[in-house]
Length: 110
Image (cartoon, rainbow, N blue to C red; front, side):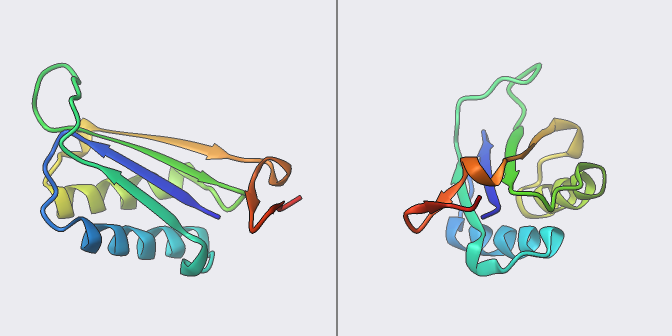
């Protein structure tokens, strides 16, 4: 049920590998099975963050298991390591979604 949405102005050459690796990271950070982690990437987006230098916006959603103050650095480090985007060019939005507002397999979690 964790969902990570990556939007970046950078070009990502191996999207499948990046999605697999970020799924592993998010699974580890949330202590939730990788089976339930959904990851999406939109690269080469038109983005402006002070200038045209590559930047990244990540949306992280989950039913519980979010600890933004502990998760922000490993996620930023991952983006820098894999995409070369400096951490001061990265925004992350965390959202703890109520179980009653998240559905899978035809029913809500709560």
